[in-house]
Amino acid sequence: MTRLKRIWEDGAYGAAPVADCWWTGTVPPGDWPALEGDTTTDVAIIGAGFTGLNAALALAEEGVGVTVLEAQHPFWGASGRNGGFCCLGGAKASHAEIKARFGESEARGFARAEMAAVDHVGDLIARLGLDVDRHSEGETQLAHRPRDFEAMRAEVDETRDLYGVTPTLTPPEELAQAGFRGPFHGATTIPIGFALNPRKYALGLCRAAEAAGAVVHGQSAVTRIETLPDGSYRLHTDTGSVTAEKFIVATNGYSSDNLPDWMGARYLPTQSSVIVTRPMTNDELAAQGWTSRQMCYDTRHLLHYFRLMPDNRMLMGMRGGLRHSPGTEAQIRAMIRADFEKMFPAWAHVETPHFWSGFVCVTRDLVPYAGPIPELPGGFAAFGYHGNGVSMGSYAGRLLADLVRGATSDMPYPAPLRHKPRKFPLGQFRRMLMRPAYLHYAWLDR
Image 1 (tube, one colour):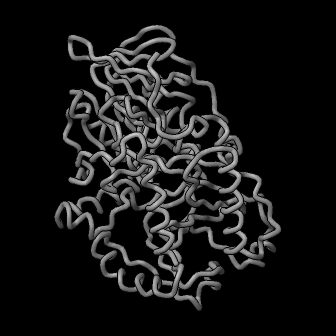
Image 2 (image 1 turned 135 degrees about the horizontal axis):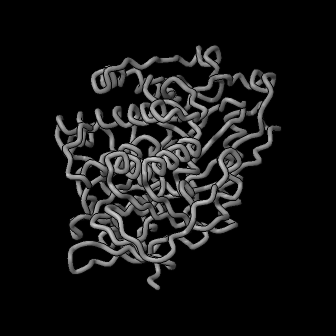
Image 3 (image 1 turned 180 degrees about the vertical axis):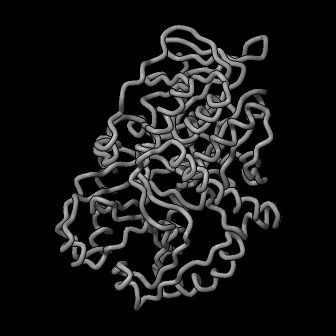
């Protein structure tokens, strides 16, 4: 049996990091049978998260035969444990950086893709009639320092020009009145995007894909991709195989460097961690002065993201550790709890019974990729959403469905999404790059 070449400790890919995930209680794992024996299909998809399920749904609705192979159960990875922010994003690179590398037209094309990604998810939820606990009118960024709010003021015209909307600025003296009381120095709200329960969304995608004719298997980790003499592919699992003319790799931060070999060092999984409180009373919300249901994040490079959910639970996330072990997980849990109490001191007594972690996927070029695998005709991949996989991961899956069929997509497909990701230095040891990066970001966040 071929061993997957993953770069984190085995425990990071196991059950422990997600054992206390709040979303699991709202949507149980379900029962998707493992692949048994050998079968054939038109397109095989590795990974049943937002990307894989969007591709599966779009292909199945066009009458294409689809088989989805998931190592655990659908939406077990990042798609079932993220913060539930459907918003602009997908790249860590700024608009100015994208413009410098790809040109003005392509940078604007990426902005259009960001907006189209949010619209795609919203339209899909409406079309499928999904109840995903949707809330938040766009996304709010809170200033970590006074100078950050001045930067927000300076960016209003650029945001209006790029996205066609005018951000709402909330000066520091008005934060409490707006329900944002905390150690912040102003805010800006861009009216694009919404919050949701990511598992409810992913489950809806999975059921819709199955209803359209896709076959979804859980407990079916692909261990090898074999190229057959006729140019088709056989994807092997421990209990069977799927032969297909084309295939999609949709594993993002849970990828393997040898599945296929082209993936090696082109992605970097980094950990993110989340806590969720018990439901709070209205008096507790009033005591802190945080009553807004906006999805929020701060201006730190090592940012916090947080939102008050419909049942009065507060969700808060931040970066994870540089290693994965029970000890490092305990340390990160203590760190995020300490930051929670510093930001929301009136809630110091409020329990946070739910804690979990998972992978965010970064590329060296700091932009996502969705396109063909050059070394394998008929092979496609999408990854590198930089913490914005709800929207961009969904969008990438929909794009891949068009590419697989050879159809001209009516969705923006700018150069940043088409650009083949360069490899990180250090190969399998590329995690070592994170420590100096985190130290640098921490210094910038002073």
